[in-house]
Amino acid sequence: MAGTEHDRILMTGGPAIVLVEPQLGENIGMVARAMANFGLSELRLVKPRDGWPSEKARAAASRADHVIDNVAVFDDLSSAIADLTFVFATTARTRDNFKPVRGPVEAGRALRTRFIAGQKTGILFGRERFGLDNEEVGLADEIVTFPVNPAFASLNIAQAVLLMAYEWMKSGLESETQTAFTGPEMRPAEKADLMGLFNHLEEALEVRGYFRPAAKKPKMVDNLRAVLTRPGFAGAEIKVLRGVVASLDYFSPKEPRGAGYPQRKARADQATRDDEGRPSSVASRTPRNERQGGSGDE
Image (cartoon, rainbow, N blue to C red):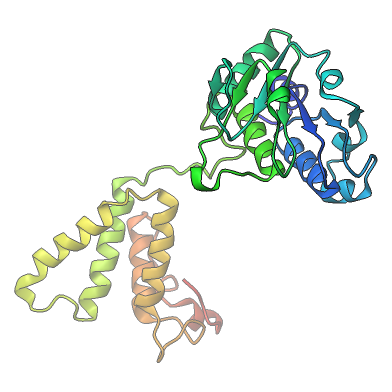
């Protein structure tokens, strides 16, 4: 729930994102934006090619200014990770070493566990052109790699950060299927409402000669009810369908809505009032537009 203590914790802290020799300010900015999307805020740069600060990075960050404003720049990777206790290195290539290799889901959960334990962690991302070299991977504790198409395995640096940031965020949710918002609560329709739709539709079709030949009407009615029963309509949806049927049933090109109050509509309204136990009177049986001179509506 927005505004809770759980959300405050979820949206702060987390692993540091370390970019090794990033080349373009625009890429750094897009990394910052991806981090902000999923609750990460600590960005570290190792020897950015075009220097720092970068207005191009700020523009590409799309208002992730809190990330850009707190960027830390280092001369070498060893300095950038000196205060961290656990580091993942991202790579798409097989490496000749003895390091464990995890997928992004497992890596996100591992980072969350260490974060809860109070450890400072980080994720290394390499250069746009060729990623991390073996020596840099050697400084990490474990490797994380993505299940990509082996024939086209290279990811844009911002995309790679986005994938890991997403898994970090997801690992902190109460349920991995949790969403930021939900659809409206839909209460299942009562059978009486569904029967009302059946009867209304069947009456409208009967008037228009749909059930032909007459001998097939029972089977045709069964088919209609089977179709309308299958979706499991909510009460609000039944009301929408009743409105559609009413419009098609009571109005026509020759007698369009607004041109008058159809007699069949008047009789249906009167039957509804009688069913609800309201007193019937001469006045109530008179269509509204005839009493008031208006067009009337359903």
